[in-house]
Length: 346
Image (cartoon, rainbow, N blue to C red):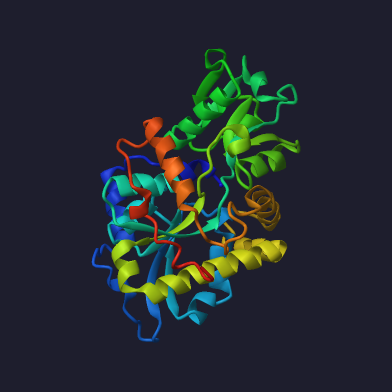
């Protein structure tokens, strides 16, 4: 989405984490990283979406491993975030140049006046959802009388509530508990009957640990969750304005890596596993990447180039978040979007 809980984490941070973030990502807010390095390449500070590494980052590692950023004239300094709520803030304050983030996180950042611009969508569709290993749970109404673990992050809570209302689940008959930092042990041990998770992440991990096939309801429109762009390349607005060609090349390179990783899933997953041996095994990476790709297959607007984003989807989702009081005030998505001008072929 892994511990996909992060992918929707929008939480306040302790001062120590904040200072660590600033120190770890250069501490500068003048967007000076766009200047050329001694090698003639344009420096780019790239902060990933999540720490520890997870399979959604496969294309990042593929691009790095194959030298495609350098080929595109970019000297990329790639770092994992010190906290998973940080990437949009680090980019929005100029302490990183680019990241890959999620529509809700970026809309919240924009609502706070941070300098963020959404450049392109790597993968359009959300891969988070609710999963269970309990064979007695065959449809969502079967969750009544059961224990369900949900992450404490606002987006996870909103997704569960929206899902439950869509299926007419009487939430007074569901024992909802905190999922803590990672829900797989709770599900595998039988302490909870279902949990929030992600294709390629918790769902894959739970299946591998238990040897059972999970029932999974992905948080996409068929299960009541509105469309929104899931994995989005975002840049600091000043950096993008000052480095338009570098921004275009960065987008093109990640989209190239994404396409190659979809066409060569096993090889791509093995590259990720090789570069992140402490985070995953080769077997888990291959299965996780394949699982993730099944749920991200297909673009919202297939007639448009890969990476292209429909402003109407952003506008509709922003209205949904405001109605659910997820956003404290409305945000004009046009202030966040860039008219797809950084998407190759647009």
